Image 1: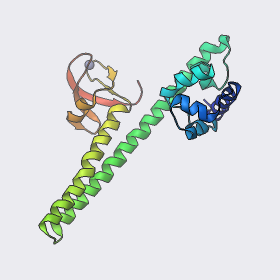
Image 2 (image 1 turned 180 degrees about the vertical axis):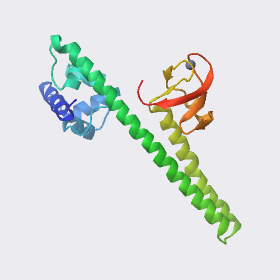
Image 3 (image 1 turned 135 degrees about the vertical axis):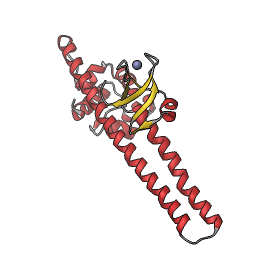
Amino acid sequence: MNQIKIGKFISEKRKEKNITQNELSEMLGVSDRAISKWENGVCLPDASNMPQLCKILDITINDLFSGKIVDMKDNEKKLEENLLEITRIKEQRDKELLAMEIFISVIVSIIMLACIFIASFINMQYWLRIILIIIGVIPFVIGISYAIRIEQIAGYYECEKCHYKYIPTFKSVFFAMHYGRTRYMKCPKCNKKSWQKKIISK
Ligand SMILES: [Zn+2]
């Protein structure tokens, strides 16, 4: 999948339809900077914008990913290639998200420990200690919730018993016992509780 080629294709099709970048951005409810980023191959449109974009440009999703109008006879092959590529991009993004989860968790933990350490060992007024601890705990609570949210949506969990792969609810991830990213949860398929491992590909 070639972002530059896709970008040029979007731009070409947009001009064919006599639509300005500005008009297209209004139709899709995105900024005109987003359109220019797509067209310059800086990034791809969000999946949520793709169906509408294709409809406006009068192309198929498959054409969009191929960066050209795909011949009917090549259609199936191209579709397969594109689906594989989309899976690869998703896996890559999930890996990045999981790396960010660690980064966020480490940073907010350091902030909290530093605040608690200072509040405990340095001479200061009582109320100042309390405020310092609050300052440490708030980013920790927000950061960790955010990190768990990332862990919930990036990749899948695999049931230890029936090997079903799925995305659980935030609540079940949040309240589950865990070591690392392996969490003790109830599988939605076999309904048994077991240690469910985080995996990237389905
Ligand atoms: Zn199961």
